[in-house]
Image (cartoon, rainbow, N blue to C red; front, top):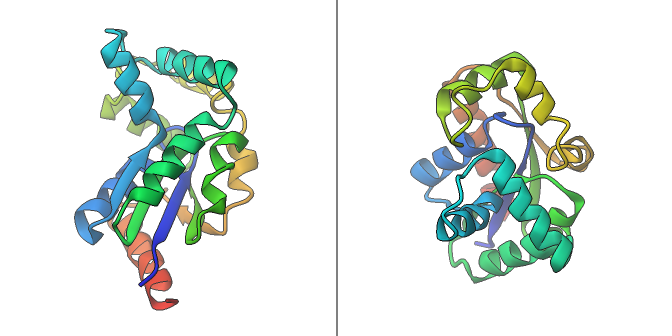
Length: 186
């Protein structure tokens, strides 16, 4: 069986992490996140892991090295990964796609949900230190930050789509069908 690499793109709190966790727990996928390397740096430097700080670290790497530096790191990780099902969570910029789209078996998946659903999810999950107290106005403003501006353009390149406006069971059924589709195409 050849490797299936699902790259998730979607707006803030659209369910990318939930989808990746489900595929890891149910289908044995390996998961990779763009934010992991940024969180590693923040931890090492004893910097709060807020959305703003992670974006600053990302910007510094891209300004000092290259716009596709994070994609290059993840692509190398994916190529070394021995698992047949790999999930990449958090594609946001054209540079994020630079190296990933060249890997055989890469499939870009757009996961989407409406704004109110995403806001509720964000304020309840507590992934970043500032999520639980975020106002809806601040959440909307987050969509105008540099890290979020290109998501719509990247999502337009997707070949697969997951509607995450429904129940967790509905999300799981769509993910199961997606995996089955690509496993059977081998």
